[in-house]
Image (tube, rainbow, N blue to C red; front, side, top):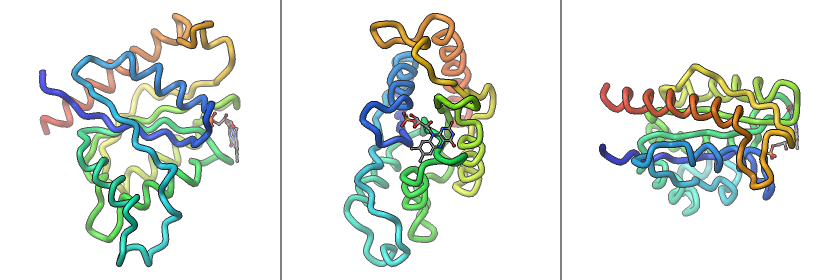
Length: 184
Ligand code: FNR
């Protein structure tokens, strides 16, 4: 089966990010032909429309990496009931200059975790709203609003069996969605 290049965007810049841990664990559940690369959003300057006339190198590099990908996986925390500013900044950079939307038609998956009771439900809803204008076909169901707590992980840092099983099911459905989108 042909390789699928998956770009992974983690919405948290935090070193010990729970979302980064979620992403790393979930990536181990993907089929072998799904090759992944983390797309670092931490070096991107704050978007300013003046940059459209002279796009900074860090943005050009980021956009070039996104362009190479067949699909994108977003793994995001929730900041004040929405997505973190750094993630919105990266999404905005990818859409400009006008007419050069690098996210266009890339199939997307959304995951998120938070110690809060709603497990990023609001952030993911906001993100899905943005992905619509970016024209990214987005995997819908099942949704994963993971309520983070220490009991989710084994001492080795892997997910406990029940959580792993649930997330493997999500990966199976998401990978089928990506393959289906590539046919259309
Ligand atoms: C938060 N946090 C948070 N959690 C949540 O469930 N809903 C929310 O609206 C918010 N709001 C919020 C705002 C800001 C500015 C911060 C710094 C944090 C808590 C958040 O879930 C927690 O910090 C997680 O650890 C963030 O995910 P990472 O960075 O560990 O991946």
